[in-house]
Image 1 (cartoon, rainbow, N blue to C red):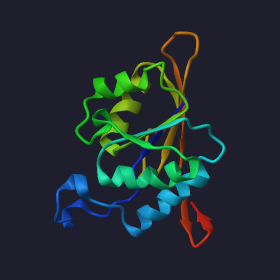
Image 2: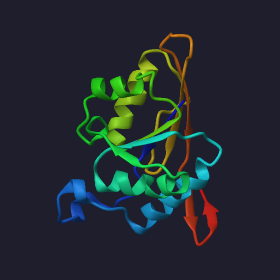
Image 3: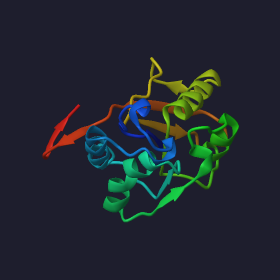
Amino acid sequence: MLLVVRHADAGDKRTWNGPDRLRPLSVTGRRQADGLVARLEDYPIERILSSPTVRCLETVQPLAHDRFLRIEPIAALGVDAIVDDVLAVFWDQGLRDAVLCTHGETIGQLVTKLAADGADVEQPLQWPKGSTWVLRRSKNGRRHVDGRLLEPLVVDGGVRTH
């Protein structure tokens, strides 16, 4: 099983003055990142891989801290990722029970390609900021996937909201 997370809210990139790779999470995004800990509390997680952008790293930081895991930055999950590189990471059989934090464009390419290849995934295909796709790969050597979307969870002062 892989948990593919879209980075949490990082505000409007048009109003950010620095390099896009350094754009941090907004206040809402930090609350979504905290919510990710609660949202994924029932899922086993052995590794956390992330796009090297600040907004992705900040999204999984609370989860990494909670699970005592280090975050592994990986270029294949970056904002300009090539779908074949993302698929190579996704189909790596040595990777299981892992979080992959990436960008909307990247998740869109991945989920759309998996659906086109016959994956059983929830419809409509969407990936709001801070959401997670739970993608279960078949264990019998076939390249089949079952997937469902977990909506983002925002933690605000100890109160969970959807």
